Image 1: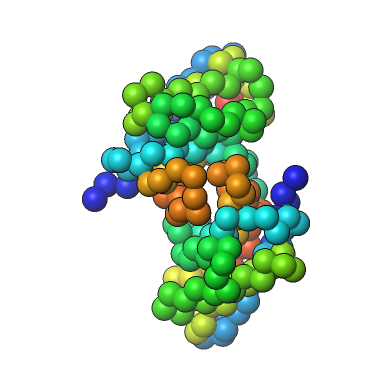
Image 2 (image 1 turned 90 degrees about the vertical axis):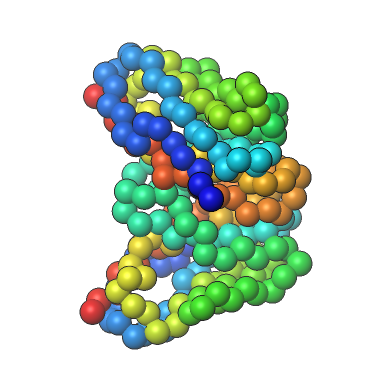
Length: 115
Length: 111
């Protein structure tokens, strides 16, 4: 079956532009996570959804970052007025069941470069 | 706040060697620990998941152990191959659901 997919795979934005990154989780997966991975570092948590509810957004670095999952499936991470420090790979992961020690499946990521 | 570290940061070995990658975490209140592999420019591939009640998991040439009380995990790779070259990431899942990742170990297996 299909895994987690993300689009676009690569995005170049000029500083100050808004961008939208899409994540299609595995069908039926309840939980969805967004992570940010800077070059040479491990991923860092941004936000977590259980179905359409955003239960944790403690990792979002500023109010320029916004995520939504309106129908409990596809999610979009939006970054407004991009800055150079936003350059990173943005990873999406999904998990079948909420509230437990269940495996997370990761997408290939979107590499964002802000010039 | 949970912190995860990995040692060594980089490792280069000749093909055929057995090797051990180390992961440490500061808070033992975890749901599980997961080892991932990441190839350059790619996403994460799950290798092994160890639940907090388990001591180890095995898959093929890979064996991962977990000592929750001491905050440590090791990933053992037997008979390494050039195709094992990648970055290996350790991550712990906290009760807040999200994973906290270590910085990774970059492994090069030379033919």
